[in-house]
Image (cartoon, rainbow, N blue to C red; front, side, top):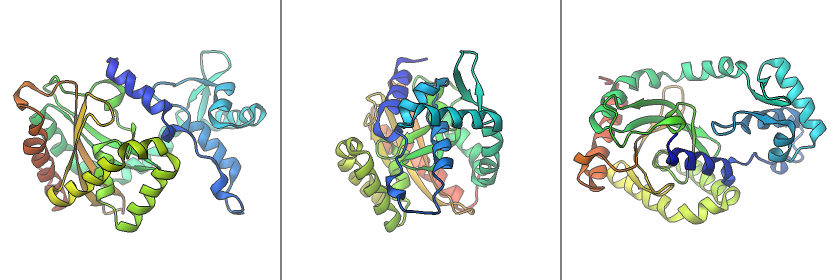
Length: 288
């Protein structure tokens, strides 16, 4: 794995937006099933960087008592959402999760409509083109296409995979998603970022504001090393799909930009316009 990818996974694991939610905000809500929520939070503790965890590690990450964690992991194993690892006393995610998420992935028809156009743009630019939807304060990638030319700027490893979650605040695709929101939704998400991930808010408040202005003016926004110094990307809001899911797209590069790019202005003058045109065609129902 590239060093940059390792750094990204470490960032995603350690930053506040990766910490499981507490339940204080649901105190007094008699309809809220705390036990169910705790089981889901255990599942969310696993990541591409930490695929195997023990009860002790899960207890540390969630703040739950060891006996509670033990009962939850026992139940999740019986249901197939966790499975015992080859490492004694540890667990990893089970195949039942794939079965549970397939209906969601299959229901997003835009994934299939966009695939060919995404592949063409990835080949043209030498980058990775992704489609994402919101998961709490993250954007989860639901479709990705990588350049078959294997250019220098192509993303590699876990960073390039469908299912990866990236912070809304620090990424082009996240800021583009915010630009595609109605005002009330955007205000609510920004306030949640401010309250729950104070470090992200302190670092990215101003860049988020600039990105929203760029999207309003140009239709896209550009990230130049905001999250990690060697990740560059363009983001474009799509809007809502036929199923009502709010979607954004990006085209991302890792490391030095392709030699033909002639500097970072290429992201705006070439990649931004190409990605924007792709999204416009998708909105019009033209997927070629």
